[in-house]
Structure formats: structure tokens, C-alpha cells
Image (cartoon, rainbow, N blue to C red):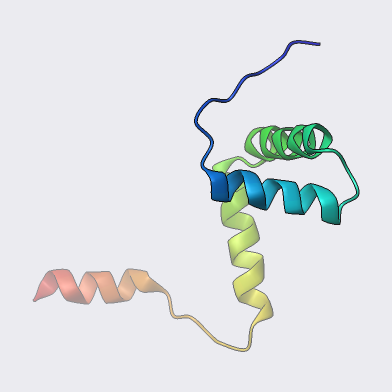
Length: 79
């Protein structure tokens, strides 16, 4: 498996990653690999259409209602 070297990592970032690894009972290397894999997977599987659908679903679950903005934009353009 190839290696990756990351230079100039800020101390606070490294400390946060070490704490996260400790919480998850992993080595720092294992934790970094999990973070990289999760990020790579999310970026490939989350197309803009999936993101938009997820946002719409989350908004639909709330108790707020949203009007159709088409009419509002049309009125604004007519001014």
C-alpha cells in the first residue's frame, strides 16, 4: 500500500486527531486512514443531486413550510 506524507500540520489539528484516535481506540495512523477513506467515499458517492435530495428531505421533515420561490422572483423582476 502506498504511503502519504503530510507536512506542516498545525499543532492544534494534530492534537485533535490524536484525541479522536484515542476516543476511538485506534492508533493515529489507523484514525487518519479512516478519515481519508470516509472523505474519499463521501466525495464520490455524494453527487450534487444526492446532496440536493438530502437537503429537500431534511427540510420536509421539519414543521416549517416553504413557498415556491418562482413567484417571488417573478414579482421581484417586475418591479
